[in-house]
Each structure stands twice: as C-alpha cells, then as structure tokens.
Length: 173
Image (cartoon, rainbow, N blue to C red; front, side, top):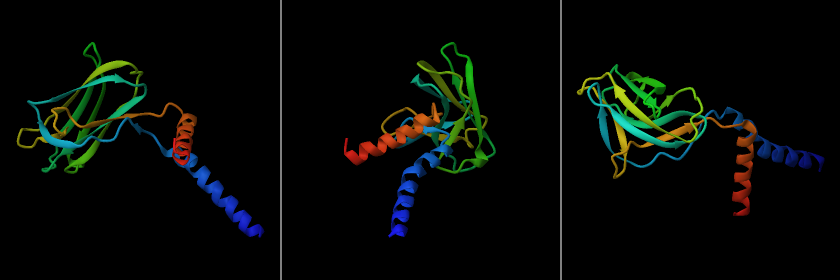
C-alpha cells in the first residue's frame, strides 16, 4: 500500500514539476505562429526586401522567416533593423550554405530596449539574381511571413504563465 502511495506522489510531483524544469531551457518566445505562406520574393545584391515592425514589445531578440534556397549557394542573407532615425540598431547574417530549401531561418541579435517603437527591417543579400534566395510572403499579401522572437522577461513569470495556462485548460476558462 505504501509503494502505491509513493508511486502516486512521485508521478504527481513529476507531472507538476517537469514544466518548471523544462522551462529553464526556453530562450525565446514567439509572438505568434508562422502565417500561411503564398508566393515569394527574390533577395539579391540589387534588390532588398523591406518590412515594417510596428509597436515592438520589450526584449526583441530575433525574427524568423521562411526562405526558399533551392541552389544553396555560398551567399549571405542579411537582416538589418532600423529605428525611426534610420540608424541600424540590430543586424544578423546567415550564410546560404546553412539554409535548407523552405526552412524557417532565425535572425538573432542582442536586444536593447525596443518597447513601443516602430522599426523598419531590411533583408538584403550579396548574391546575384541567378543565385538569389527567396523570402516567402504571407498568403494573399505582399508582406513577408515572419514571426518575432522575444526573450522571456523573467523565469518566474514564464513558469507562472505555463501553470496558469494549464489551469485555464483544465477548468475550461
């Protein structure tokens, strides 16, 4: 009888403590899920792709886009983040050899405080038009399909969000 109680207590502890332990490995939180994609736009040395990022929250650490790279050439795809004064506040570069065709590519950067500001992002490349990588657009739109990544404000807040989400689902709220 004691073995059954110990087993039940152990399993309950495991079930309720594992999310807290697993959350220690979370470095980035996405703002939304990746939108459905439609067409794509080539990005090469003579053609860049601009994007407007309005009302960005605190702790922005990256952006994810889906990239078409069927040739896998040795060319760089660069993302630059500009503030309202047109100054570069963040930059990240990914080499085309490391990008699989149709994969989601993360551009990461360190985060100064970005809360409540509107930014312009620019994707550019040093590739020729024949070697160009393409960035997928949102379905029925000319805007790039992207997801913003944020650093969790605090570990304790992240853990409380996980458990409150559990309670909402369990109680049907």
